[in-house]
Image (cartoon, rainbow, N blue to C red; front, side, top):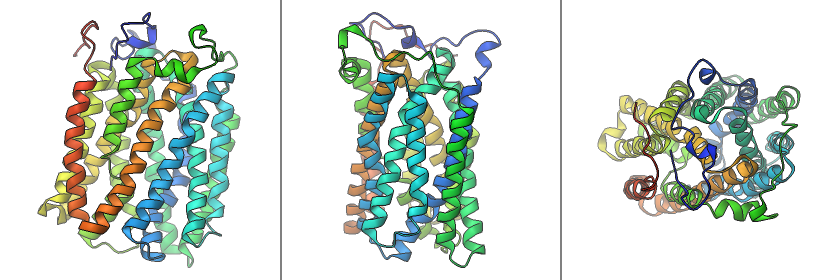
Amino acid sequence: MYLADSRTTPDPSDTAGRHPLPGRRAALVPGAVFALGSVSLITDVSSEMVTAVLPLYLVAGLGLSPLGFGLLDGVYNGVSALVRLVGGRVSDRGGSHKTVAAVGYGLSALCKPLLLMAHSVPLIGAVLAADRTGKGLRTAPRDAMISLACEPGTRGRAFGVHRAMDTAGALLGPLVAFVILRAAADGYDAVFTVSGCTAALGVLVLLLFVPGREDARPFTEPAAGRAPLRAVLRRPAVRRLTGCAALLGLTTVSDSFLYLILQRRLDLSETWFPLLPLGTAAAFLLLAVPFGTFADRVGRRRLFLCGHLALLAAYGLLVSPLGDSPTLAFIVLALHGSFYAATDGVLAAVTADAVPETIRGTGLAVVQTGQAAARFVCSIAFGVAWTTWGDRVALGSAATGLAVSVAVSALLLRPSPDAPPEPVR
């Protein structure tokens, strides 16, 4: 996507994604991206083991209502939003992206064993908040390292490769949880134990194999002095992108709610529930790299918005009477994975295009914070709506809001009249 800032001197990174680099070099993905992808793969195996069983553990095991689960799910996403800016700003000021990312991964790894001792909703909420604090700290520095490791014209591909590796972990995590639940007597405790060990391995791989940016420069932009956040917010492209990410996030229903609705539609047993995220993860894994490459060629803005249309189609199928069909359940999960493949890495790539590298972490954190905070609000609101009116009405309302949000975002993200159009190939 090209978001022009006509009042500033053009930055070479602002044209990224519009002119893929010619030749063999453009097709290559740096080793640092694969190393970070390996860390994310291992960490996601750990995280998705917990995520796969947590909704059922809380709702069926502890008897939480949809409203109570919405509050916890909101905490799970909202705390991450509050600390992303901290991670981005700290890593920019010291050029220490790897250090801040390692702290975030380490904190999340420490939280997994604590779930063994948390058997009440307040304690589980505290552990989840600490886990999401770690995720919030690491996300912006990690994405900054990816964007700085690759050529501007291939950022979509690079983020696609990373997200594909990350999603491979998301695919393996529920499978491991499924096997453990079937084999272990104390299934949930066994899942949490294996998850903690796997997360520790991810931290070790980060420390040993991910190269640090020794030549990274701390933030020194004279116009902003010691205020990188102000420098980021002065850029109209970032403000528009943050506003659209937040608007769309307000109508993006949590994955956990989506899987709970599918479980009720299909009347699945608790044993099979952890397999539902596999459909999403499989589609994400298959499409992340092709969609990232496609975004580099046709425009990241277009693909980002089309991804939300895929999510809207999934909502429509679940609201309709056809949503009770097992066949359509596979279609819903495929659309859900397509949504992530077209938006997750693409949003990070286009954000990287909009800010210079000296404030890259802060810029990524601003957009990610807006999106995560909006999803926090959506989780709570959806839990209230489900408890009050039922899941069909709640999801129908979310679908209506998403349709309006996509239309508004399409207007806000139009290229500036002074900007050259994105090429269509």
